[in-house]
Amino acid sequence: MTFLFFFGIVALVIGAPTAMWFKTWPDALLRWLPRGQFRDAVVPKLRADGPPMEVRLAALGSWILGAMFVPGLLMGLFGLVVMGLGLVSIPGLILAGRLFFLGRPLLLGEPGAAARARSLAQFARILNYVVLGLCGVGLLSQVPELLRHGLASNVFGLVALSLSVALYAGISLTHASLLDRAAKAIDEEGFAPQALGGVRIDAQGAAVMPQVSDEMSDEMSDEMSDEMSDEMSDEERRRGR
Image 1 (cartoon, rainbow, N blue to C red):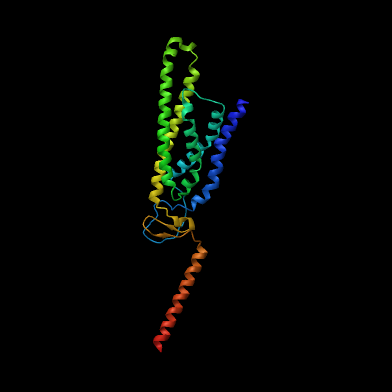
Image 2 (image 1 turned 180 degrees about the vertical axis):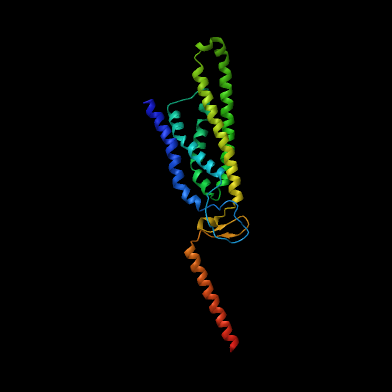
């Protein structure tokens, strides 16, 4: 039973982020400009290399940490309250749920995603500093018992659990830093609400149209050439009169 429980958790933590990634990635490729593209002119989007690495990692981390909502809820239902950590279980579940639903807007660079990322990064820092403080107090409280009984002490399980929780808090703090960097990258990209309609307005105010195929580009060029030729012919006829 225990094996099935942990297997289900691992499958969830790996499967849910993977499914969200493959579902969102094609849309993300259409929303981000290639790195280093000249932005002071109206140019076609010739290729797409997707969002910056910090945005990718922050979005993937949001789905992974967000998937921990389910095991966190299960542990809460089983009444796992160790060394006062149950006091922060509810804020932790709130953080996990909000992170999971931040992944897609973050990867797409949607309007408002940067502000949400910064808000959750600050929330995560406060929560995890509290968790690390509780872990530290719990570990220090076990030192006398460990010194008194040595290897025969029964506190090693609690110490291991505290260290595991502290490690998870450290991972969450690292992800909070990634959220800040991702928010900065989104702000620098300059996404505007018009991007949702298929036309990008970049930070310099230049319109960037979606990718145009060579065939369509040739047709547009031919049409423009024909129109210019007709206008020149009409102008010459008027002058001849």
